[in-house]
Image (cartoon, helix red, strand yellow):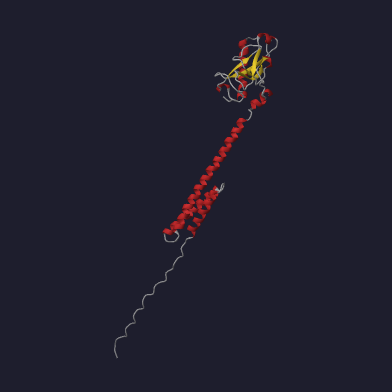
Length: 262
């Protein structure tokens, strides 16, 4: 019988440890692509640019998150995440284009409203004599007394001087002057004050009426004014009427200067 102990049994081969496999986290990249596609479709539809912008921003963020997971081997849909980024950027671009279009539309409407407002009758014209609202041009050339002149009458002569009668013509024909206002001088002293005093008062009153007829300030206008004032004899008889006439120093005019705005 041997004194040696029995040999030890051979060691068992090492057993492989179980490896835990994590499922791919592909949801974020897929969501980015879905949001990007919906954002692009919303950007094409008018007035939905705001939705395209919101979806584009969210989809862009999720697309970068999904792409990061793919690079860390946490997801397998890197291409889908990349397309999510691309479509989300496209949705944001369409959103910006839609906003610019909307701003342009409102700007055009504001300009049209401004033009409509400018084309209406000014308050000065509304409160002036009713003759300003009518076309009182004669239908043919005729001689009339200066006391019978009305606003809108066009004169055929080349100058406006002290006279008892003038020739009126249709404003559609070439003419030198157009009556744009008839005003009364202050009824002061019955004695004749002199032509210089009368002319100064008449000029001041005619300039005050100019913009209401022409639609442009006199000190900025290319047009000029003349006026017909009472003579010494008519003043002593109680005449205080002044006719204001506008004319173009460049020559005769064809058509009315009412609302010429120049």
